[in-house]
Length: 117
Image 1 (cartoon, rainbow, N blue to C red):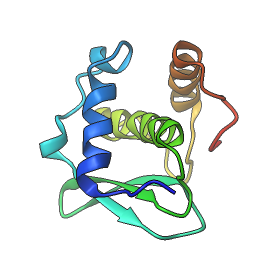
Image 2 (cartoon, one colour):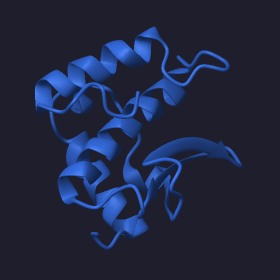
Image 3 (spheres, rainbow, N blue to C red):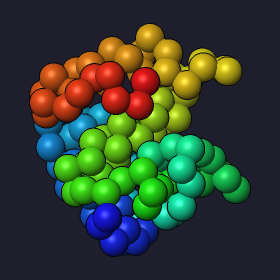
């Protein structure tokens, strides 16, 4: 298990934001988001809005390696992109736009497309 902190999640977010695909999306800088560590067994990560702020949450129980943390944060960055651009579909976690972006990101970075979907 790797020790997660909001600052470490934000650091991975900023790192990925500088790399291709993510660098073209005009995602908000980490200081404009909230980052939260949870201990849930139910999810690896999530993105939600609270008080007009976008939050990214990562679970210490679901993420045990740096490689998995990068994948989870990358997945959640697709959700951030959808929130920022208002591309979400009500009552749907992963719509067609999400899946297209996720496949592209996974192909670029060698991540397993079937994770978290």
